[in-house]
Every structure is written in C-alpha cells, then in structure tokens.
Length: 146
Image (cartoon, rainbow, N blue to C red; front, side):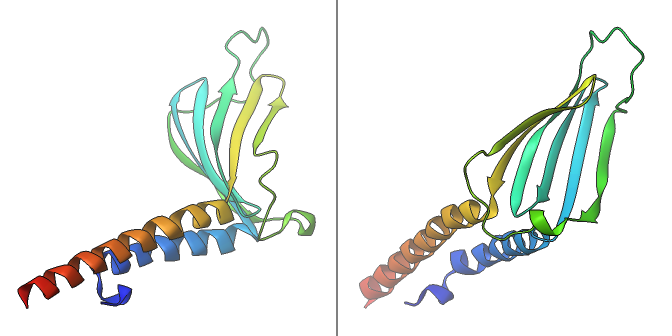
C-alpha cells in the first residue's frame, strides 16, 4: 500500500506546509509574538532569518531608576518588518543558537534560536516513518483478510 493512501500521510502534510511557509517567510521578514503574565517578564516566540526564536524578556526588578520600558500583562505582536539583506538566508548555521543581550539598562533578552532546516530534518523522518508504519499495518490487515 502506498504512503499517500494513509491517514497519517495526509494529517502530516498540514504541519509540513505550515513549517515550510513560516520558514520561507522568516527568510525575508521578522515577526515576534509575546505573552506577558507578570510586569517583569514576557515570553517570546518569533521567526527571523530562517530561525525559530523562543525566549524571554526580563525587566530587572532591582533597577533603582525609573523604568524605560513597562510590560503590560496580555498578548501582543511585534509587527513584521523586512530583514536587511545581510541577515537573509535559507540555511543558517546551527552554531551559536542562543542570543542574550541587554536591550536597555533594565531589560535583558534571552532567546534560543533553532534553524528551520533542523526542525524540517527532524519532522520528515518521524512523519514518513509513522506513515510507512501505518501503511504496513493496513497491508498486513488486508493480507490477513485474504
């Protein structure tokens, strides 16, 4: 039985198309979403430079001066913007996947970057293996029925 006749194959196409679309978009644009539960910390998820970025924004609570930035609890999106030409690429290097810097004197950004090609390389064998296993089970079931 061919793989394209299994439910796992068709269900796995949707995440693959989404992954490839985000990968292609992140090669040209940067988009970030954040969720803030506390006034001192926000959780970030974004895509830029063919990387998926996951991290946090931390405001130092011990800053003895007036805050430059305040975080309001809730959800938000940092608008899409085109990447400069020198930051565009489809296959970024997996070396140096983390990024940590102080954006302002009381704001620290910690981001773990994962290249999309690594996500695709991990997803494809799992998805195709599950589809092949399901096709084999169906084939054996049909053969047992005679």
